Length: 278
Image (cartoon, rainbow, N blue to C red; front, top):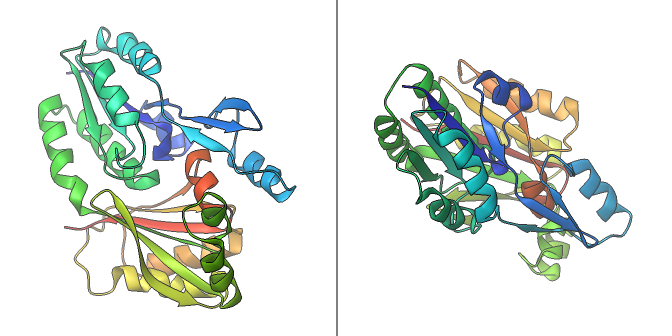
């Protein structure tokens, strides 16, 4: 059975991984200074960071529309036995709703709400792509992914709450207090919602190894793969995080860059870590 895997651009998988598994992305939209662009095509995180740093306002993000999904599904539904599409969690965007409407015209298009974002969504996409490569049937892949969704562990730490404050996701007073006290909150994603976990105090690159240990110590997790995702994090900082992760025996430690949708909410110097519980 030939199965095509597609995903919203919010999966944040690298171009190399997308090419390896022949994964097609449906880009979300980013509007900056009245100009609407496609995530990862017409605009990139560096453009957003430079714009905000120069005094510009945060861009806004919008879902993939029904027509875009229809175009993608119509292109592949006839060419493949099945299409499996992954959406950013429906709690964060209208993408899943729009994709379901577009898929209603096709018997062989399966739409999955990842209940996640960034590479928390991406690690599910990779799992499906590998299952498809093994020749598993589409219904079995979908069933397996649905069982896996609650086991994905997604957390991230922003160096600053400035972008979250600018976007109205936390108050400017809270952001100012956190910055003054050098507090770095761990943002935890669970059940399709975000909450604040442990608050770390200190310099960003110094607290990250502690963050990794807190995520993994004493937990029963799969060691086949994990993903480090970052937005404008310095190479030496990433190397230190990778070294901390390597102590836990993962067979594959992937690195990814947060796309425009995630970066516009969290800002530069944000790092996340994603793995799967057994």
